[in-house]
Length: 284
Image (cartoon, rainbow, N blue to C red; front, side, top):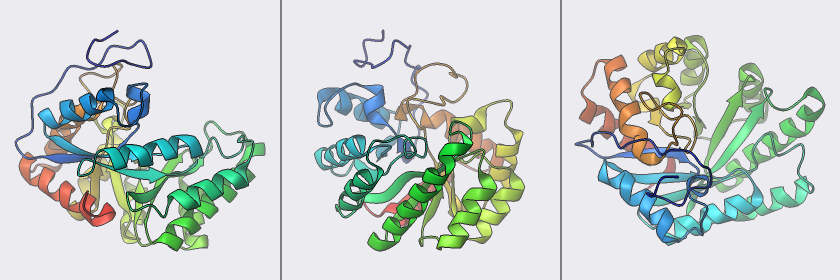
């Protein structure tokens, strides 16, 4: 086990990349899965400090259950200027939670907190949820969309093997003003549809993988003002450290690949992403 953090899992933490010269923001992380700790603990501060040391000075802490979303809100309270929260039930949890309506009420209450700036991650996942659970999953997604509209905050989409269904549900219910596709996984054609609707595409470490040319094609065509970056830490560590434990400090590796794909200056890309992230979530 690494001695850098008290980790939940016995997995080596990826080495630190070269620091950025212009700061940037991690649009999606699960800090409590990196360090098994209280939201205001020295372990969480250590993760944030290490990310800041390489130029990632702010993080969106993302929810996937009622209990964990409340943890995220406390984390955002503990680190003003550094952490904001998103709250939701994960699509895979919605069909199996013991009290879906009660959990949705918790999310609706947390959504009103001033440190909560998005409802997510919500959406559809037809990879892990069997067909008999999809009705509840779709119902939960629609409820989350409505919560986002009720509080006038962004919705953060989890979309796995459900591209058409996610887009159609957003159209059916009526999308909130700000929609973020977390860990964008579609192709260039889907990207064009998202862009035409004014949605944001958030790219994770997957864009650096050799088997993901479709993501790089989507990144290349997306308008600069619709691009975000994320880790989904502790998952999806970018190359060259794929397989090791991911943290927000790994964002520079993803950003360098993104700048190369778009043939643009890295500092300019960072500045644009900071502006886009602030446009979606507001000031930290």
